[in-house]
Image (tube, rainbow, N blue to C red; front, side, top):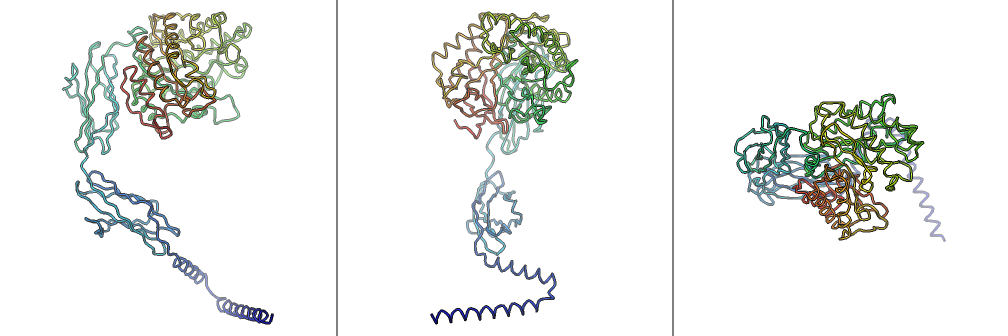
Amino acid sequence: MKAILRKRTLTAVSIFTALALLFASCKANAGTTSNESTDNTSEESTEENEGDTSDPVISAFTATAGVERVSLSWTVTDNVGVTSVKLYQGSAEGSETTELTEITSTSTTSYQVSGLTNGTTYYFKLVAADEAGNTSEKTANATPAPDTTPPVISAFKAVAGNTSVTLKWTVTDDEGVTSVKLYQGSAEGSETTELTEITSTSTTSYEVSGLTNDTTYYFKLIASDEAENTSEASANATPAEEFTLSSKEFASQLTIGWNLGNTLDAYSHDTSNQYVQGLYSETCWGMPSTTQAMIEAVYAAGFEAIRIPISWHNHITETTNYTIDSDWMARVKTVVDWAYNAGFYVIINVHHDNLSSSDITSWPGYVISLDSTTQSAYETQSKTYLEKIWNQIAEEFNDDYGERLIFEVLNEPRTVGENSEWWANDTNGKTLNDIVTAYEQVCINAIRDSDGKNAKRYIMVPAYKGSSSNINTYTLPTDTANDKLILSFHAYDPYNFAMYNKDYTDTTFDAADKTSLDSLFANVNNYFPGIGAVIGEASASNKDNLSDRVAWATYYFDKAYNDYGWPTVMWDNGAYEANSTSGEQHGWFKRSDQTWYFPTVISAAMNAVGVTPGTLSQASETSE
């Protein structure tokens, strides 16, 4: 007990002494200036750093060889902070004593050493320092080498016009393309007449004019890089007077296409949200805003047609003449021009303007109804709407566009919101198809009345709901132009394989599916054997069944095109992940970086119709 008391007494004395010293110190420093105070703080900080003994961590230091150069890159971290990175060079391991540079910015993590000799190995050292003067170092080496990789010509196409051919190409090179030379000849292998040499990498097309229609011309492209490596590709085309082909001959030229789905067709009736109205509607269904790079990437992949679905009813500024908002028309024109100038056959339409009888009271559009009272109430209004919309579209898109621009008057016209919307039978199907034909007649008359090239432009027309199942009761509208109407239908078939999905129902493409497709295509051809047709939408939903979707694409596209001359336009809504409760997983193209979720399926479809696949880079989200 006594020992414990004595210890407590000593502790109290110590505390008293410490307080006295502290008081004396405060009194002595009462007149200290702010600068002296700052100096003390600095000294304290220095003392803290002097306590740091942890070296910087160099988690990566790489030397990547190029042509007569080496690129150095690094990752350095430190618990207090990196103050500098010094780079050294030498001619042998351990001899890295020549300082290249000192970098004090932590945001700089790379440095290029140029003017080196190819075939010689160079050695480099990185020394990283922190605020306490701790250092770490790491070495790397690389051997610059001559560039022996030729340029990559991912696309070279010859697009025929009237007495002209437009050549279009996509060429890349790891060291830079220096020139593109174009040659012409009268037969394959005879392309020896130089047309031009182009040294600007921003120029990717060239028009050859003054040609003779109905004569085939052959062209060769030779691309060179800085190391004089070369690559070549060839193409041919036959100029012809436009709008002279039959609907079957013309439709077959589209070969294979892709839909810019859920984009310009997207809409919302939520007027309280400004971010889904006006130009914002383009992205309101989750797709990014369309860019020229996206469109050109689809073309470079090998697709020859593009369908651009467009909704108009949510962009009307007044309802007497149903005037289309000028900003929306300008946006549509921009996207159409990107596609047309890239070399596509371009399909534009009136997409989601087919409304229910309840929506038509608040929004402009057109109505189809089995109820005779409802149909009678809105038929005149619907026809006026379609006439005014197509008057404006035809005025905007006329003589500046040749036959590669195609109009599709309606998309899947149906009784929206009614029991018959997707389930019309032969009896009511006839009634509904007659309404569709009457509406289409109004559209066609408006297009033809605009004269110019629209007087003979190719026009796509669908039956009720755009399906093959009601095609037997459909009657084509009349047309003042000879054989310029093309049947449009959609076929996500066989349905259980391509669409319907509950816990991955029907994931295998088998003989029964082939028989189903055979029957569907034969039925369409049986009712309309004399005109061209385009399958405007088709796809097989992802059910984690890649090999079966490849088999489906091979059979489907081959059968449609090679047996009947029908091009198929792949639907793409961006939804690429398998989903056991959704049959709408039709994502193919990752627009944000222009890669493809399932390039083997796309390649299979292209190979089936005789198109050589172009650039189909694999998206990072999927692997094949």
